[in-house]
Length: 355
Image (tube, rainbow, N blue to C red; front, side, top):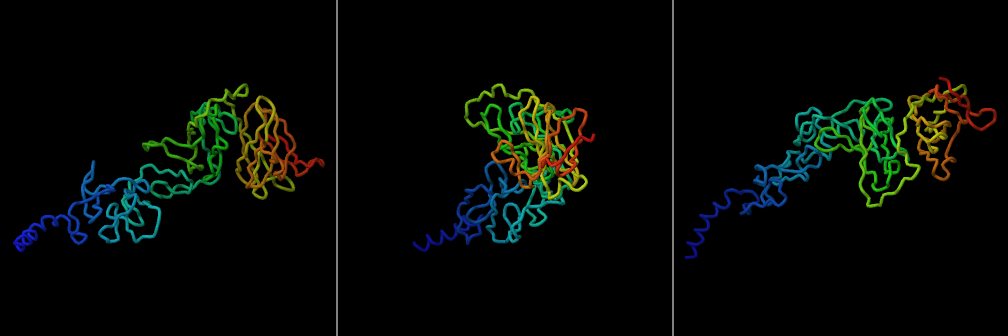
């Protein structure tokens, strides 16, 4: 009798094992707890909810369907995305746009919209090389009606049809203003980042100046639970109109840009509170800067390249290398020039309007 029962089992066993021959035939029921389309026990492709056989989901980078590679059959190739697991650790690259990583052949989504949010010269989606931009890049930072940049509202730039914005001119890769510089008028929210709406289904987040001229980025704020604070009479309700200027730094006997100096313009008078603006380097002899058009006076400050000059911070003025004399703003002039290191024993560099 025992022999008959054993013989019946041996006849029936192949029916259970036929569909699952890996793992020494120990898989009687497929299990796919991580929903990757691969049986967790034997590695066979199985159907998953809402998809076909062997379809995965998620992704460690956009376009790669693997959050964690699976190689149940131990052939050195990921069972889900086809990545060659023997390849060294790397960022997936699809420069030839064939839908596969050029290094390991992992499946990727073909990139139809290159962008470089981190400013490293490569598309963040597929790794393709992006055009290199020499010199400064202009980015328009839209603050919204309640956003402030260093305590001031933005202005209107009709050339790109934006309001309440800041014209930010810096080299590719320069860090964008963060929450220490971007604040909320009523203090009910905290600045959380810059985004661009590029038709990708979700906003693209930017942290540095991108390799793209005239990109428009929008400030994002996250509610912090604070009660609204009345800005009072100092509420900068009307956006300032910014005016562009040029500073020439080379003069007989020297150049203010020597030592990779960072240059700030400090403004006061008129309707606004005193404020410092960082100048943007064009070349070894020229800097650009923009200031609100209601100021009446200015001076220039020369500091080390790693110094951020904030006049509201105690001891900030002691960080300067050099300071110019005061210069009254002439509404008909837009180009200033440093004339000497020390003007008539004043200890301050000479400065004048030249055009």
